[in-house]
Amino acid sequence: MRPYDAILATSSDRPPFPNGSSHERWVPSWCERCGHDRSLYIDGGCPIAFVACEGRTPTEWVRDGDGYTCTEFVEDRGWDTPVPEPEPDPAQGSLDGLIDLYAADLKLEVAV
Image (cartoon, helix red, strand yellow):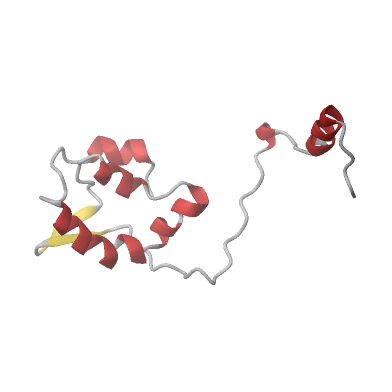
């Protein structure tokens, strides 16, 4: 999937839905069933949905009758499917010893 900035740059400046009711009818059939929507809780979410929330129509949403088809739709794997843990970012450093540091400042004993 393209990053947010690329999706925003090619999106139409027209709102994808004329009203909230249209949006509410469309989302359960698409976003709520899509693995990219689930990723909101894992890696920040679907950039296509974020562009749409700004009142712009992403090019990934292709007109289909009285709604859209999302070209990036992937069937959700389900909440019972384990999601791989992301690799740690070495730039963030380590939190090892942080609890001991705070405990020492507060004069607490840490049970190990």
